[in-house]
Length: 229
Image 1 (cartoon, rainbow, N blue to C red):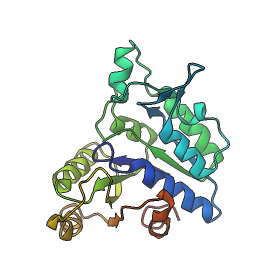
Image 2: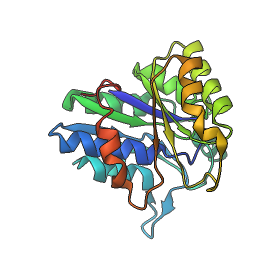
Image 3: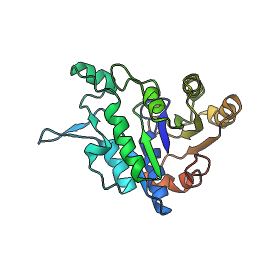
Image 4: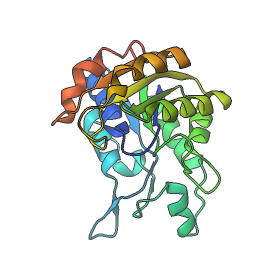
């Protein structure tokens, strides 16, 4: 069981979570996936909202559950889910997300849960991503950018998690497409500095790739460190 969070939005959470599910499945493991809150969903002609990230996780895991079960809270506006809910006058709470997780935990030995944005992003008007991770009692893996700026973002995220009593298993550095290409001398030191200052395993950096499954060989080697072997 593992909760995938990040230092920010757009750093590669879904790509990494999908690779975890795909590589566990390749080893013959039955794995459940859950992204209980997703915003920026695509409106469909039938009035439904299509959650791209949850669909990516479902495909990676080969999950038989319908998308409605894997992503119960969906919003069209590209905002933090809690803000999107507030604009609609809704306060969904965490109960539906917790119940969805419990159903998966009863069926699978391994469940990968993905948050939304960074650790303190509001999921509801009253709850953050960290609150959901605490409610599910899951350890975290934090996905972060590899380049300049990641030290502050990563250290703040780890500190916020620890202050809330959350276990952080590892940091994963990812060469996100959102990060500008080109020379960045900070990449030479960031992993070592983060490892020294947090005491955590720092995995990666994952390379920038054309196909999401191209990172699978790296991710498959990390199952043990992440407690998923």
